[in-house]
Image (cartoon, rainbow, N blue to C red):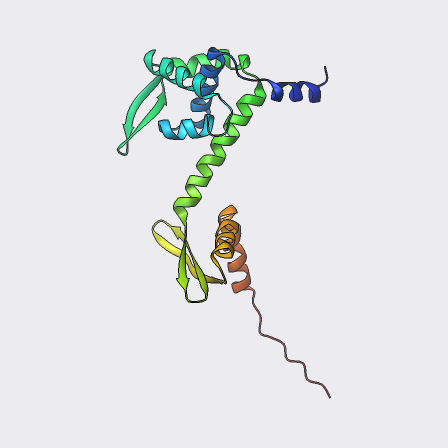
Amino acid sequence: MDSISKVSADYSLELKDLHTVKILLCYLLKKLDRPVTPEQLYEIAVGNEIINYFFYTEAVDELVKNKTFLKEIHNGEEVFVLAEKGKYSIDEFRQYVPKSFRDKLLTCALRYFAKLKRENEVKCEFIELEKGYYVRCRILDIGDDLLDMKIFAPDLEQAKLIRDKIMLNPTDFYSKIMGFALFNTEEEIMVDD
């Protein structure tokens, strides 16, 4: 079987084994190397339809019960942390989970945490006007505004579209605005003879 066929076959597999799900969840926590709230882990694994709800629930219960996942409090929130025995065993057992599942789960997790970071650094709100809306966009850095601007939209649907486009890549949005501001030149006036 060539490598492309093997990868395709891996993506068509389903996780139907509780042990595989437990290994996959441990792998994720080890790769993230950070505490993860139960809600975050659920959203990443089940919300992205990588792991079935029932397997997920049973796997997490067993991982907590056998102290592979430790429950701790960080910044006032309950989080899961991978215990040392989980860190050591994942190197041994990760090959039992197809690489496609490992990659897909890790990619979803990284996207999830990037989205959370963007939402904390970029605030968009709608300000209703008589004939439309302002989309107020604030890009924050350590509590200070790097950018605070309003963009007019004729209706709520277009205001939401503007917000969504900004949130796709707020760093690029900010960079383009700064580029236009810094490299803006005086309008040339053409005089005809």
